[in-house]
Image (cartoon, rainbow, N blue to C red; front, side, top):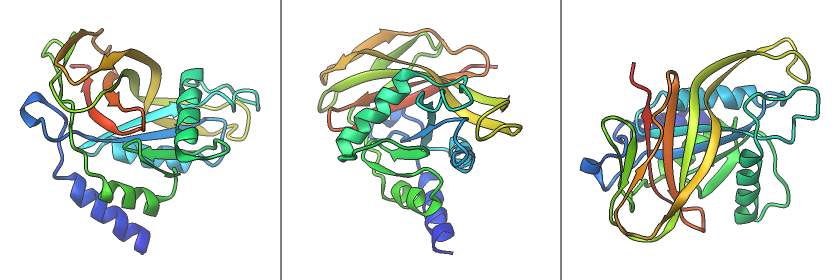
Length: 232
């Protein structure tokens, strides 16, 4: 009951948030990152939760599929070393001696087991997503503008597939059909934001894809975030 109540509170709070745009420079979506693998039998409930969050206004949900499960019976088609390295960086930030799946990180500052709805709901309810770096995409989706603001951080681009269904042939989830939401296919660093306005050219998302921009400080704080989805 407590977990359902916390998640309901978080959902109500998120209903007031919107995607980051130039006209809404003081807000941004809450960034939720799930570190997961199709080879992990504990991950499907967390994947389902990420799918729910991906459908909510005011949330930027991203599925990062790590690579260290790939030699345990099933190679995840989304897996990448970039996702594993990002999770390792969070482990150092949070003072953890090891990495695990499923792990969820909310706004770069709080981590929890990715299937723990109560902990996730509490983190979402506590999030204060201020946009210190305004992010706005051009109408043709071929560029993104970063506004003036406070602080500095890396500019990251995540290209993701909005939905993919996979029939798993081996490993812990053998013979299961898994559905992944916002699975990150590529994560690249575009440069650094130093508080000044910038204009960066990008490739628009293909059909069924989305592109997310994250501005992240060295301590993990999300300074700005936004996403654009492929137009029909």
